[in-house]
Length: 251
Image 1 (cartoon, rainbow, N blue to C red):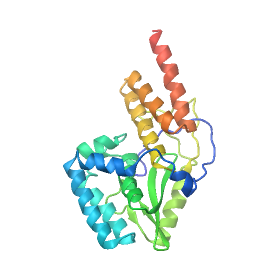
Image 2 (tube, rainbow, N blue to C red):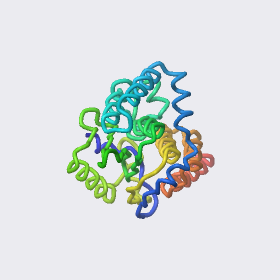
Image 3 (cartoon, rainbow, N blue to C red):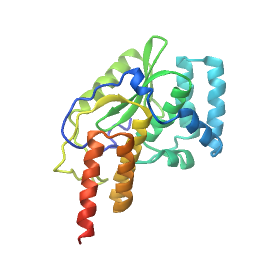
Image 4 (tube, rainbow, N blue to C red):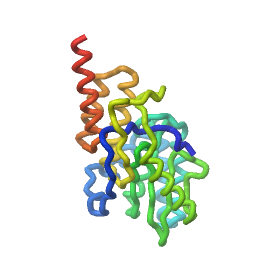
């Protein structure tokens, strides 16, 4: 599994994440139906995936079997090439994805078909859990072979492992893994909604553009992220990039 890939920068002071209630998660401003309708009319691969999943749901309904079809069909049709900081648009257009965009793809279908699911944000990773047929299933988008986890003991071990790792692993700002010394990692292990996940995607894009030294675009992306999900680490990166722009303008 690709757990070692550091997908999300952790910023600001430590705090404990609190899972959202089901009602809070439904307040997302991101519409799964609108998302699916747009890409269904834009991308041939997405359209094929959507048609297959509709047939699967008609056949299997809200079941573990459908979850398995969702996971492996997503891998078959769209999740082609792991690429750190890849956007949802890149995923659908090129097949490049990371844990945020890969999870987003599957989450919109879970949302559309009314599953009881959680998008789990940790200090350095994102994955999905689904409650179905009296059990919990994990969907780990970055592992196309063993990322569908439905064994009770394996699910428990997976969740315990990530909760522990999220509270101790340092994270880095660039691919060379140079630690941002003046910022502290928040301990995060919590459920978020689709809107907040979109905020994390924009957060990742801000890091990507910062690493490319495209500071104006990076700041634009982090401000968009902060509008959708004003979490502590997103706001901290916003302040950091704003200060960086001020310094750059005075050089």
